[in-house]
Image 1 (tube, rainbow, N blue to C red):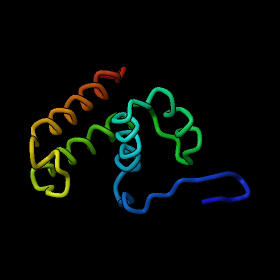
Image 2 (image 1 turned 60 degrees about the vertical axis):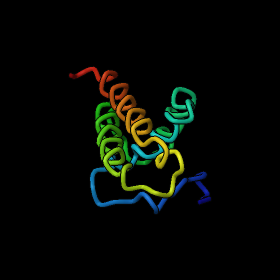
Image 3 (image 1 turned 120 degrees about the horizontal axis):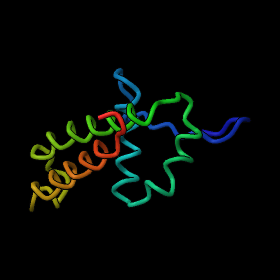
Length: 106
């Protein structure tokens, strides 16, 4: 979306009615999976209109990962899942470990 103030990315597929940290976990997960989190996350958050604490983002991302990991066995549209669902579940759980281990208030 273009406006006179700049560019904005809207993903209505992932919109929800819960806490914004749960929804913002989706682009964070994609950046983690592409190994681009360190390079791009601060720029993404600079453009995000609702300021969130790092802890809220990490918890929201972890909750989103846990939710998505639970759905993996029912997903039949991804070939890797059909062959080895445990591999993807393990990857998601390792992302949760990274997110929660980076929190300063645990």
